[in-house]
Length: 600
Image 1 (cartoon, rainbow, N blue to C red):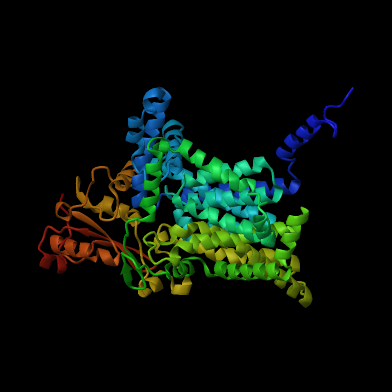
Image 2 (image 1 turned 90 degrees about the vertical axis):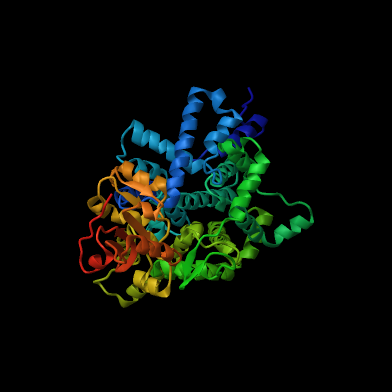
């Protein structure tokens, strides 16, 4: 009787191929690292939930709340009446809201709201429920940063990488929000990690995973357009001369992961974004045009407000130095220098060429591949600002995709410093400081500062600057932007509730109507207060300071007949947002100490 699974049997060959596609039994190291990653993610999400209530809702969050509500209503209609829900007119009705952005995160916002707030009641405030998916994405980014650093460098460096990312003050702030910036960074990291794994281990199954992840990345935010050039450059460089030789000989084979990204990913984007189901080409062109030719908003840099090209090419570099903790940047520089030196000293190009020709590979080649992929991700994330036409209105959030890779190189820098310190400790032979405890002490030293900075900056995340520019006060002196997006309304909520008269109208300035309404739904703002964008109709006025907004404050002075704020919200002594109340006495009496009573 013939054994159908024997090597000589075609069925045996097929069985072996199928078996190779199945995940192998995880090693003990893999299980431990997986548990650590889960603990890091869950701990970070818990911290975000505990600190979210103090952050007012950003202007963009308000728009996404509205879109999520609309998408959620469509999903309910789909469950009740699929034929009607799939009609082009119905799809356009529900998904025309905020159609300039893909739907993945807004759909998750809607799902979290319906499940965790309405049905299960696990989350007390509706706004926090909408924010939960973004927080989970932040947790995933921290976990994946640990996993990749642990595999490529080591477990303790992995912890340093994960927590360095988690406690970058701007990352910590954005991770609270129902926005796309931390999610797109998390999905970018997941896609590149899966791509690296698929290239190193091979297999169609792994390639399909890359295709699916990139499809979800496309459906998160338009930053996804920048990733393919990074991966293609990585592929070309890793193959060195073999690439050009095979290209000349017409024997070049595109890697399965790139093929999956070119086929599976667009198909997944189409299937999961109903707005594209009709007039697909026209709407894809509209999506591209909206972001390629985005309207310009104001942003201050070194005392000058930029609102049209040419934009300063210095902006992303200066803001990175001004907002990322210095210790993280120093470790990043050390790690980057170490990676560059090792790549050169070990003749990586020759080594990888030999591997491509003979099919052999080593863990060192895998590490080189990872380092090169990290470099490519950083370069393409900053590349748009090589053009003076690229807007700067979003602050640091527009290149947030680069920060996980900065943290990964910081882990390599930490390992270098820790190794040198251990050698120095061994040489000194000091019993009071065993060399084994040096890496742990160093990890604590490089993480405690960023952690304190991130927690101290809450809820003033957009006002947070590092000591290298003198903190918030030094940044204000230098003329760096203090705030935008209207989130700082949240810092004055208790004062507004206390001092506003019943049914008072409030000039909300830079806060969007849906964001204000969500604070009322949460119960943090009184429900009787009426938002308005007309100063003359208000008795309470908010002013979020930006230089180009000074005209608005002047209008408040004229209409309210006072230049004295009733209250000022400040961060580390720097005024950020102020509250005016319309006095019911003359301005002269008010300035002499008259009672600042408000009227409805």
